Image 1 (cartoon, helix red, strand yellow):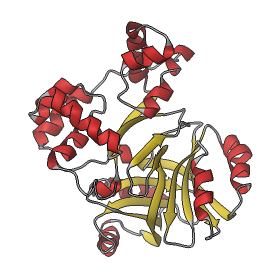
Image 2 (spheres, helix red, strand yellow):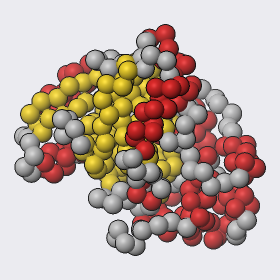
Image 3 (tube, one colour):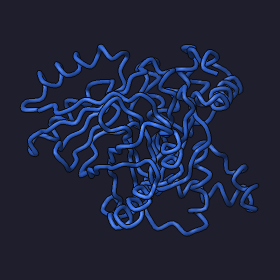
Image 4 (cartoon, helix red, strand yellow):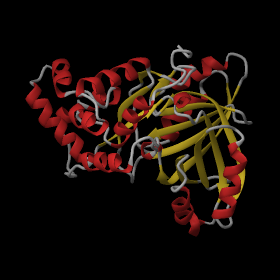
Amino acid sequence: MTNFHASLSEEDLALIQVLQIAPRAGWTDVGAVLGIHPTSAAARWERLTTSGAAWVTAHPMGDPQEVSLSFIGVDAVMEDQSQVVDKLCAMPEIITVEQTASSRALVLTVITESMAQLSGDVIPRLRAIDGVLGFDVSLCTRQHFNGSSWRLNVLSRGQQQHMRELARTEHVPGHLPQSHLDLLPFLARDGRATAASMARELGRTAATVQRQLNRVLASGTVSLRCDMAQSLSGYPVTCQWFAKVPAGQHEAAAATLRRLRNVRFIASTTGQSNFTIIMWLRSVADIMDVELTLQQNIPDIELQESVVMLACAKRVGRKLRPDGTALAAVAGPGTEVR
């Protein structure tokens, strides 16, 4: 499997970037932007998704005043740690599970509908897992950038602009009935799922599901995201920095960081550090260059710790193979992260 996925062609990468910008774009529009036949674009995407090299998923956004995004560093036994990882991956509230080269054996990203769910449900289940020796929790107080905004750098400016125009939708907020929410598990598994395919499983007409789908997508209830195997992105190394930035400088620091194309995630947090940054890099050697850039461009930043991720078992609800390609989606709550 790993050898088969040793690299992606420029055409593959271009298609992935198109869907990063407009995850549900029609194949006619995709083909026009890429200069290929729509059936060729669809066939190429089918190959990428079947192999797990790339995928589109949808994540419920939740009420930002209620949803809790937290990061948990876990100390776990070294022997049979894979069993601990499997149990963590099976918890839908834990949307990302990464193994690290640090004192924290694992780093988890957790989404709950409330703080009460985190403290009363998730943490007790985490504590009960055999092999978990201890953990520390920090809460996200503000998210400045996430992985859904990360882009490959393959398309021309004109192609990118064209896709951004296609991606624009009129936002129509409002309460969604259960009949509409029934579509969310299908979109979580495949963000490009068609109304016809959902209608067959739900026992509804395609026209009815299409109307419901249009309303769901316009409501802002879900956020679509095209992701890919990190090992095939050209940026195989993940590094996370735990930093301290004066509270009044967080927005300015985030604005500076958003100009760096390697950035995957920026957030303000609670804890001994109050600012976290995640980047995808070409090599471990890039870490020093990044740290110099951070210190030169963000006044008063204090880099307290850098952590390199050794493996990612689950990313934003999607379980991954050792080579980073995707397995089946794991349904659960969500918001946009990493």
